Image (cartoon, rainbow, N blue to C red):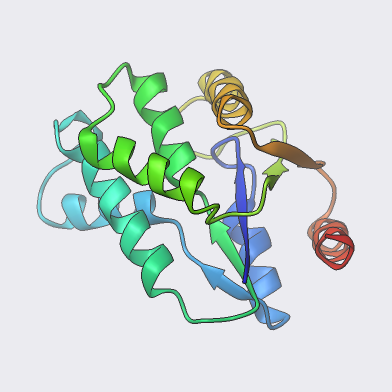
Length: 178
């Protein structure tokens, strides 16, 4: 089974790209953090990222999604525990034991392919209820993501800021070559 991670700047179009790939028949596992945030906000917590359990909740959800993903020869993941590590680093939060354990598990079991699709920013970042970050700050977060993935031994496959159809073609070409 080949599992590929998609990561990059907040608002870069990762989820849009993955929706397009899913529409073409690819098995896509959705991002956990957005759902963790949405559930907390629906329960009345305006800024769940300020809660001490936030990072652990995301790590737990990511593990459950990876382990519970529909079996397929190819799986595409909207973010990974390395992204959650980058988020903790960016927010200046401690890395909880659950995330450390998950990072160890994915490394020792080689859960994901060593090449990660790094979706480049579009030159702007549209805020949402779950994404309250300026474009300038998103670029800082992008830098932390790059450093995090490299420090965990992943290679980055750059997906440039081109039209969606071109991004889809680039990804499919890279998947065929891998």
